[in-house]
Length: 409
Image (tube, rainbow, N blue to C red; front, top):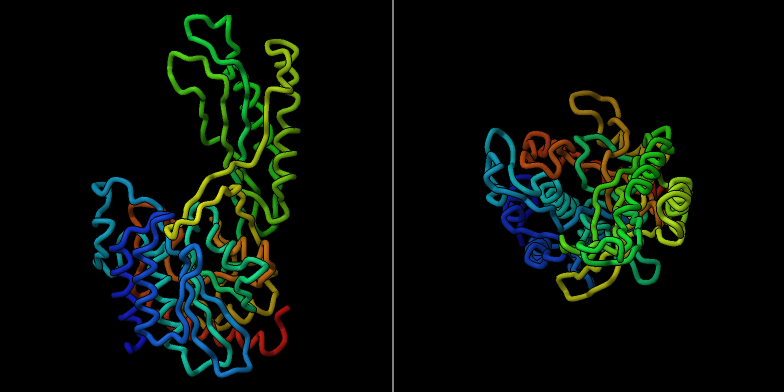
C-alpha cells in the first residue's frame, strides 16, 4: 500500500495526462484511476455499468457522507503544434503542470484521489470519490451515478472543476435546441420542381436573434444566452436542393429552465417570422418548421449505448447555506484569514445533475484558472495546487461537520 501525498498526486496527474480519454474512450484512464485507489488503500473500489470509477474511504461513523467528484473524459487536444508543450506529455515547467487535462480535470482529480486517502482514519463520515464518464458531452455518467433507483446518495458533493481557490455555488446549464425546416428535395438544375428548405433560414435566424435579444437573467448567475452554432443541410450533396435544414442553438440556461419551456420560447420567438414567410414566400411554412431538444447517440467504453437529449441543467446554492459557509471558512482566501470568495462558475459542470436535478447540496473547489480550460495553454500552477491539496484536508471534515450538526437538509 502506498501513502497519499501531494507529490504523489502530481506524479499520478502526469500519468493521467499521458492517457488520452475522449468521451466514450475513458477505459484506459479508468483502469489507471482504479489502480491508484487500490494502491492507496481505499476500502472499496469499483466501476459502474458505464465505466465511471467509484472509490470509498470508510469513516469511523457519526458523520455525513461527502462525495468528491471530477470526471474521466477530456476534450480533444487539437493540433499538437499549437501547444507550447506537448499536450500528452505531462510536462512540468515554469512552476506549472502542462497538458490536456492539467486543470480540466486530471490534475484536480488526482488531488481528490490522494486527499481522500490521506483523510482515512481521521473522519467520521464516509468519503466517496466518484469520477464519471461523459461529463464533456452532457453529463451522462453523473446522471447515471446519482439516479433515483440504485444510485449514489451522498449528503454533499464537492465538484473538482477549477475555481482558482474560490467556492463555486452554481452555474448556468447548457442545452442544444434544434430548429428543423422541411422542404422538398430536387435536382439543382430544376429548382422549380423542389422546395428549398434553405429559403426558411432568414426567418429562422431572425427569430433566433429576437430570442437572444430578450434574455432572462439571474442576480447571481447573470443572463442566459442563446446563439446559433451550426447549420446542417440534408442531403449534403452540393448539386441537390435540400429538403431538410437543421439549425442548432447553444443555449446557456438558468436553473428554472426546462426542456418544455425552452422549446416553447423558441417557437414563440420564431412564430411572427414564420408567419410572415408563410404570407409572402412560403405557403404552409408554419407546418414546415419543427422545434426540438437535440438528441445524441452515446456509447460508453463498456458498450452501453443510449440516445440522450442534450439538456444539462444549471443549479444555484444559497450563498448562506451552511455547506457553503462551512466550506468558505475551511478553505479561506489564500494569504488572509478571511473566508474564501463565493461565486458561480462561468461554465457548466456535473453539479447540474447532483444539485439541479437530484437536490443534493453541491459546491465546487479546486485549484486552476478557468481561462485555461479547453485551450492549448492548459496548465495547473503547482504552488496553488499544493495549497489546494492542503485545503481539501480541511474542507471535507468541515462539510461533514455541517452534516453532523444537522445543518444540511
